[in-house]
Length: 431
Image 1 (cartoon, rainbow, N blue to C red):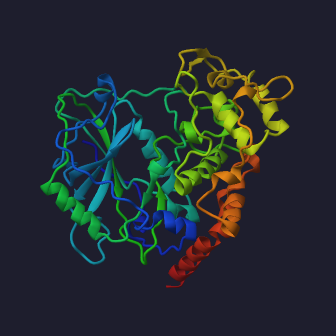
Image 2: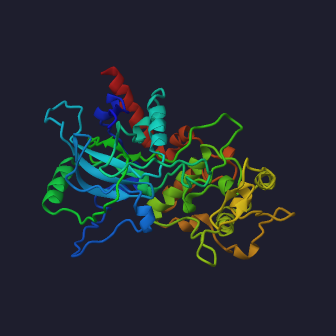
Image 3: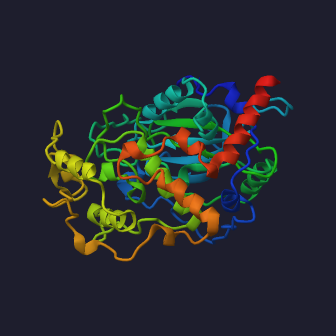
């Protein structure tokens, strides 16, 4: 078993920030807005609805296991295609007023076929950057360790195939963590899970696995909740200005136009992603509706038609870039989701997308009479106009036209939260 590696500075473990959120945001994240999803079942259920050959890549973790000699698993919090996440108790925790060792942690257990070392390296890169405002709103692992099971270890498989990771960056509701208003909730939950454990399935397969341990920050002062972005296993480092990645990234519902058209993309794809996420948080809808074709599979033409219907025709520069992407050959062909060998990323997504006149090829998919303002029903008056103005800075066809994260913080919609943060920073420096 490899030695544990501390991946976050003590500054992140101890901080507690007060943060006043805009009115509409507070409505979404207040306890009165949250509904209980607790229910009882009288028979086991299988949460990971993957084929049996895929399930073999998951580590068969059970409640009560001791990981790395110090983390006792309590219950599974969730799972994804490349990992499961467990709540665990840190056995080295000592009840001290100023203790920097958290009592409860979340542990991310990577699958055998995922490149867990990639997330570890990115987390180190993020933590090594000079301090900036954004660090308070992300969650990176504080520890990494490896383990070998009792069954013969299998080598982790990695791939250079650009289709291997389809969701980086991956900004979505599932990856936004909310701090607890009261830390006794964790203790109560842990006690309940001990007396009424979750259903679990036992499998004989096992293998080498990487664990990530994330700290639990504890409650914020006051009644507001601080959202924090987590899960960096599928992100990419930035590139120099003028260059872009070509990997097929993002979830279907958040995919930026430059990605969908097969053009190069950079950090501004995250800005587009966040713009769409706002509709999920506020309206509980996907702004551009579904993306499925007639056969139920993902269809980029359907997605593009929704964009054009709500945002209007793309500028000429976007169309020119799409045409160029048709001729920008990859170093080697890749297979798309339909099993077709593709020489360009434009072809990978099902291009071309525009005709010789610069019009969308699938005009039959366009929806008439749709307006972006009509999709916002939870707000009215000045608050609605402010929200739409804020969103317009992100939902731009051209990546370079989108606001940066810093510019978005200066928008009136977030002025209050930014001002509160700066005041808190100033107070911390003075003290």
